[in-house]
Length: 504
Image 1: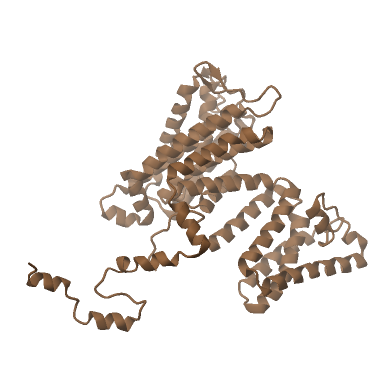
Image 2 (image 1 turned 60 degrees about the horizontal axis):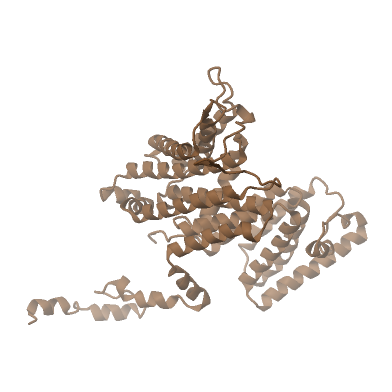
């Protein structure tokens, strides 16, 4: 039988109904749990094709995604017999492993580690010293590989010791300093107390190939192409690491890392060993990076300091941020996208096609199929043909520059001004002018923005054809930065990133 006490617990608070109605239909419900009360409202917000697709994909178990990724990687040698394609597939798996390792430190632990690539180099050099003539040591691969992973774990632990009380910019400076120490040591390690440890810029050569139970993995085929055995070895390592990290993420340590990432002070007040968790994050991330270093060192048969330059760190961080820090599947997808994109941007013809395609997709994404889109596209095309006609009438040399081959190149050669010889002042002036116009667009609105957007797009095409394509290496990273900025505007957490707890 319900008693008087039960009536008091279930009876609404005095004035609760009046307060709730005063706030309006969307205001907080006084006396009710807000999260539970608005659960249905949050579900209804996920509407449309994108919301349905996102909900369906989120319901797929993690092991199904892993199986799909491994199967796709294994099918690469089947669908293509190109040694180049197979090598790109191997490099992509390496990037996937590096992204998984960095995700431990950045995505789970919330620590800004700018020395991560140094652990990748430590693993490669450790394998070179344990499986070559450098010191006359030739350990079996089944012993050398886990030993290198252990060395990476210890190295990450040691780097984390002086850094465990640092956060943010201070931690980034310390880890970047460690990365610079590694580069300096490897470049000048040919004379350490009268003995050569790293052979300096010449690197360590003739490394032992992977060998398991008498079976040696060949680096090349009889035709001199890439040996697919190393691709399958990298896939096996990736599968093991992915499953191990998944189990680690679901453990008490993984949950504690996420608490550390969200609020270190709150985690410490709850009794979590914050410093210990930071050390573990550094150590596990370094161990994965060092393990990955053995794959590249054994395949290449050599290791050089130039293999671990700063652009590699930028690329790995871009993969993690683009895919979504904290999500294993996200950082793997980010690694695949960036790896393929970097290869596409090596060829001027492919990069030209990709530039115009991305520009068109960006315009459609902003304006949809609207009148504004037609005005922007039509105005840009007309401006291009008019500007090229005027430039050609003034001087033929302003429009006779080489454009390459292909349909896109043929079309752009009739639309973009490309002089036979670019004056030295044009490149910096147009590049800076393009940046200024892009910044100006963020301050304009309405039809004024559209009017300024038309010459901005044409200037972007001019800079791309005359400045960027002439320098493909830096262009690749400029494009990566632009894509990353665009994605961060649309999805601040990355493609599949975990939402951070924020107080707003």
